[in-house]
Length: 454
Image 1 (cartoon, rainbow, N blue to C red):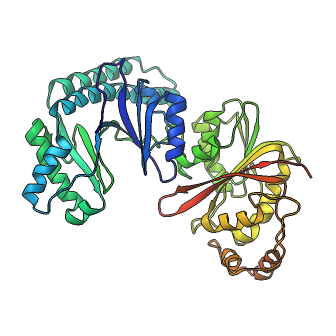
Image 2 (image 1 turned 180 degrees about the vertical axis):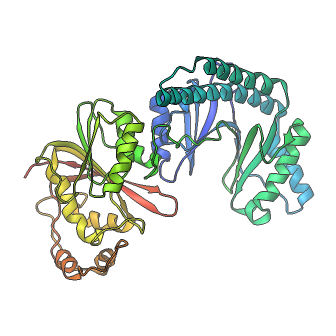
Image 3 (image 1 turned 60 degrees about the vertical axis):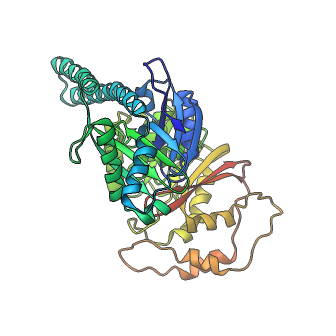
């Protein structure tokens, strides 16, 4: 059984974070690099790690969604069909050793107090910046409240609620509500904690499947993925950070997003590489206005230059950019005059033009556009790579991908002509593909390096 390491502030604690589909490897690398974490393991949607790093540093993880103290991780429970017997098995398997829970409560109390103090300090700083007036008295009250949280939680039995997700055999026998009730009753009976579904002191998170049983205590109700420096949200911040992290950004580099939208990728990149030069382009004035507000909110208006321009005509010299990173629009919420499948080759050609030799290209594309790109940029492209002169059914499917438009457009002939004579981008070398989840759909991060000039 994998369980929390409980001790004073100088000792290690066993945590786990949830993360989006496909981002687990990014989170593994991040906790190792930023937290010097050990015993790092992953399962779908979760990464487990041990560290003695300050919780303030852990809360700054960019690829994580939520942060938990691990109570225990064990093989799947075998719950009998009979509810009375199942409740007994749950009590033994999930609650188990009450000393572990009491120790975890002390650790949770200490870490929660530090997080609360940090958030209040950050909120106070934001208020001071907005109102340009001192808040010294409020600061002392805030710190006192945070200390009080720690003392109260250590001296009193906490209130709690259970959040349970289940799949596989357990889910077929019992609903999540049934399992939450079994677990809640066991915690009340064994630990004398009081259930409170509306406003609990803490949340016990349980994940049951045919592969594992994971139990943890949530450290912050506010997701780590909710950035304090973003006013208008666009692409998921965790995915935007992942795109920036695979780009090998360097200080002093010139980095552009030619379809920047509200600027989420640029915001994440600028946080990681403070001395690079950033440009954001978009043809939509409304999006650029939100991007401008985001940069001002994050105090980046002097470091990120925003321009109204088309991605098919980037107003920069050839070979002048070290990195191009772009979330290529797809889906009904976007609007354009032609299908992205038809426009993408010209867009990539323009991105390739402005890139310097050795520069990086990072694209987030739909599954269909990913297939198109893989045809245009073979993994081992060379001048001797055969060029297709036919138009397979899959290409026709790609050509049918359109966006919501105000008026119908006729571009079938142009798409067919383009499809009949695809020209691979021989100067771009494929580095990697990363499939990531975007909620209701999936997308692929493509990474390339420009290996030669024209």
